[in-house]
Each structure stands twice: as structure tokens, then as C-alpha cells.
Image (tube, rainbow, N blue to C red):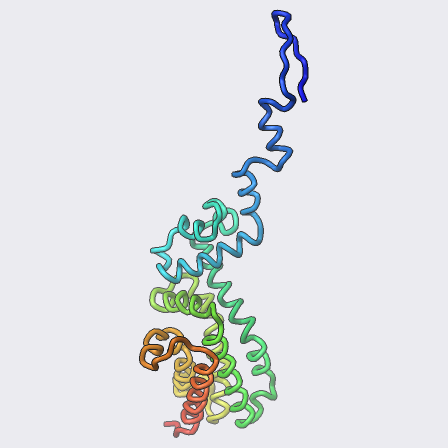
Amino acid sequence: MAETMENGSGKVARKAVGENQPADRETETGGSRPYRRAQRDRGAETRARLIEAALDVFGRYGFEGATTRQIAKEADANLAAIVYHFGSKEALHLAVAEYIVERIGALVGPAMAAAQAPEASATPAAARATLLRVIGTFVDVILGTEEAERWARFIVREQMQPTAAFDTIYGFMGGAHGLAALLVATILGRDEDDEEVRLRTFTMIGQVLVFRVAQALVLRRMGWQAIGETERTAIKRVIIENIEAILRADVP
């Protein structure tokens, strides 16, 4: 479709409607490509992708080694999206720690909530049964959840070189250790703040973590391709037996 226009010499010129009007077309179709991407990057989905990408990059390179440009690239987002959603690299790092705690809490939370009920530690026998259930759940989450490997890399780096994010990690891990220590103290007839109680509790939890943080060593020495359901069942059996032995040992 064309419209007729008369120029200054009286000659008639014809111009297609819409010609030389790219700005109007962009407005009608939702804006330019950079504009549409910027709009997309403001969404919740982009925020989630940034956290997932940051979890991987921070876990592999640490806080100092990771770059926001690399994180944005892996998240398929604009670099400005990090500033928009988090404000800074430090805030993104902290958000990753909060995400890890939230994910682990969602998986082990029900077992921990049940363990906090008064009847769960009312007697040594009840406390023993509760402790074994909690540890069993811990094994399933740490060794049976695919993303746990990335959690472990991030957490191990925080253990070696703590940042502000460590306080978030500690808030959860310290609480889990405190709950387990209360159960162990009830079983042993000791105070939960007793040094022996805390040490034995660390030993119980540590034997689970070694199968995740030292997984490469475990797989090679055991001749396993991966830790699947069969391997996890065998690990859990030995861990429970070890806990029973730790609880039976004489307390100095």
C-alpha cells in the first residue's frame, strides 16, 4: 500500500506506508531485541538462572576467581541483570548460600522438625531411633540428590576460606549439629554442650560428608562408577552400624 505525496516541484512521489518508520514498528512489536532481552532479564526465571549459574561458577573457582561476566554468560543473561536482581557480586554470593540452605532445608526439614518434637528425645531409646532416622535422611539427601555435588563444592570452599556467606551456611549446619548433639546427649546421659558429645556428633555427621566431598577417592577405591541406590544403601548400613558403635563406646 502506498500514499501519494507532492514534492516542491509539483511532481508526484509515491512512498510505501511505513517506509523509514522502524521506531514505530519496534514499538508495535514490543521493542528492539536488546530491549526485549532486558525486559526478560528482569523476570524471576532469570534470577533463578543466575543463582544456578553462580552456584556452579563460585563452586568451581571460588569467590575471588569467579567473575560476574562468566556467571551472566552461563545464565544466558545480560551482565546488568546481576546488578538488577542482586546489586553486587557479594550479594549474589550470599544469595547462593541462602539458596543452598533453602534447598537442603526443604529436603531434610521434615525429619528435623519431627526430631524437635518433645517425644522424639523423651527417652534414650526414642532419641536413638530419632537420631538414626535423621542421619538416614541426611545420607539420602547428600548422596542421593544430583545437585548436592554443587552444594558440596560451594560449602567446602566456605569452610576453607570463609566469607560473609559462611554465616548463612553455619546457621543451618550449626543448627543441625546442635539437634543431633541433643539426641546424642540424651542417649549417653550427658549434657548437650559436653565436649565429648559434640565430638562424637561431628564424627557421626562427618562420616556422611566424606562420601560426598571425597567422592572421587571413594569411587576409585571402591571400583564404583557412581553412587547409586545400591551403593547408597550399603553406605547407609555401614554408617548406622558405626553410629551404634559410637553410642555404645564408654564415655570418658
